[in-house]
Every structure is written in structure tokens, then in C-alpha cells.
Image (tube, rainbow, N blue to C red):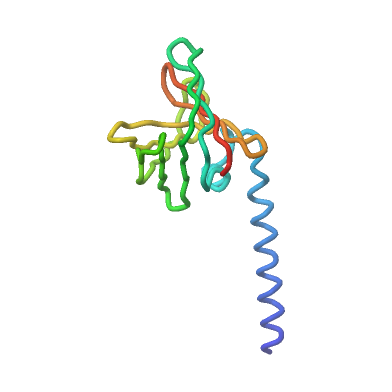
Length: 145
């Protein structure tokens, strides 16, 4: 009886692991059209800011030396901007239209008391591309740390 239970338990566990792997495909490619759970899994971890581009004229470029962000599993983020902690707290998610009128999951957060929001464009190899949701926003390029 114990042996049958052990076999059934192991087969069930194996089936769950296989189904989870199929449910959350590889993180490469577009994120905008994925489910919230898939986005959260794909972005989890520590990322280093490389640069941001955009702004009012669309031609501004900001290079970063010491800026990191960690997207945590418990719906929080920890953000260091040029060596200073600028955010360490909860995030909210909303399914809404971005500035291109495309429906996607948007992360809302507070940075030093100022509300911000990001959309998640895509992952290319170890590079994450996110964008400010709003007029005159920036596109941010980050590398997995």
C-alpha cells in the first residue's frame, strides 16, 4: 500500500512539474501580451540599469553607473539609483492601456514619494526593456545581474 502511494505521489509530482514548465514558457521575447504571472516570473531577480532613452524630445540618453533594481516575488521592489535607495516597498499591478493604447499589465510604484508606472516590453537574452507609462517617458534598458 505504501509503495503504491509513493509511486502515485511521485507520478503526480512529475506531472505537476511538467505542466508548470509548459505553462510558463521561456521568458525570451515580448512581455506585453503575457499574463501577469508570466511577467512576474520573468522579471523576478536583480537587474542592473544600463541606460534610458527618450524624454520630451525623444533624444535624451542617460547612462547609469551604479543603479540596480530587484523585482521580488512578494510584489515589492528594491531600487538603488546611483548608489542611493530610492524605492523599497510594495508595487501594484493594473491591467490597462498604455500610451500606445495597447492593453497590458502595468506596474505602479512609489519612488521617493512620487508615483511612477512601468510597462514591460520584452526580454532579449539577459536584457530587459521596460518603459515609462505616460507622456514624454523613457525606455529603460536593464541587464540581468
